[in-house]
Length: 69
Image 1: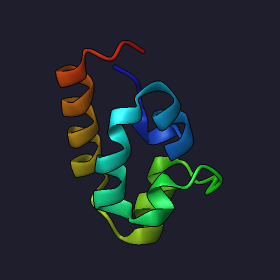
Image 2 (image 1 turned 60 degrees about the vertical axis):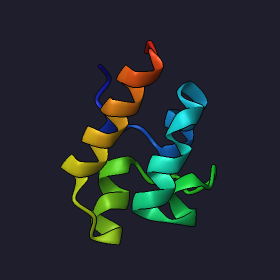
Image 3 (image 1 turned 180 degrees about the vertical axis):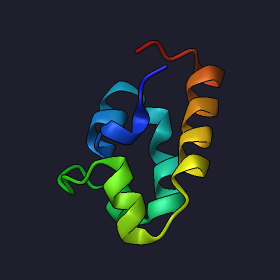
Image 4 (image 1 turned 45 degrees about the vertical axis):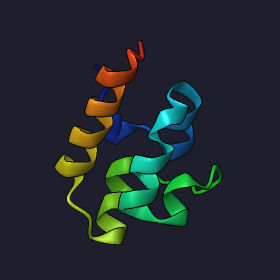
């Protein structure tokens, strides 16, 4: 499983398009814009979102869709 906190939302979406809903849920539009440039950990800090919750949700999506990194 990848270290999601080091990826930008656009990198995550490139590998796992199904993650769009998770990113939108936690970060709104900024989480799904491809040009935000923030790594997930920085975006979570900026938006005051619990990073561990986001990562748990992303891992659940990866498992359920069989996404291989």
